[in-house]
Image 1 (spheres, rainbow, N blue to C red):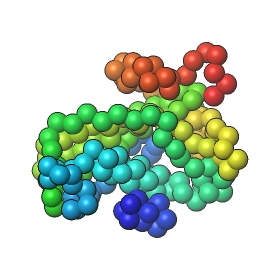
Image 2: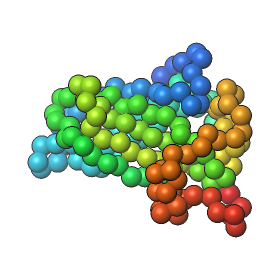
Image 3: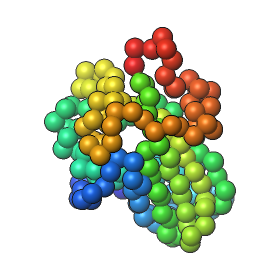
Image 4: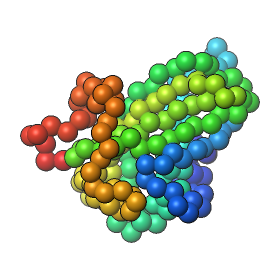
Length: 178
């Protein structure tokens, strides 16, 4: 939680030239509080690490002041994580976070964990932005604000991600209003 508070309240500096579709890298270290009784990273800790990395993505884009001016904030609509290798105490973990695309409801983000150059886990997040009054902000509006390097059309989503979005019911449906 301390890492998330720091990443959100005292964000790192904007990365000049960083685009919305460019990967953002976050490096963290596994701490004792991240471990479960089996002495590897608890699944809930992965989600907190992912929160930190998504905050860093927003910071890299210079997005925090822009979002604050609009009164918008990010929330998670759905997430899933696939684990390959356990993370151990004091290991250095690199999380690569990138926007894969968006639809009328959510923005789709992939987060890949590596440790010592080896794949450890992958998470998908369907995120949305809300206004001060709790209303949903259209992803195209967020893209226009944060992604001046891309148009309003999303890149095609990978089919496995699109299938996941449909299965967890976050994908846009023609009957949606956003």
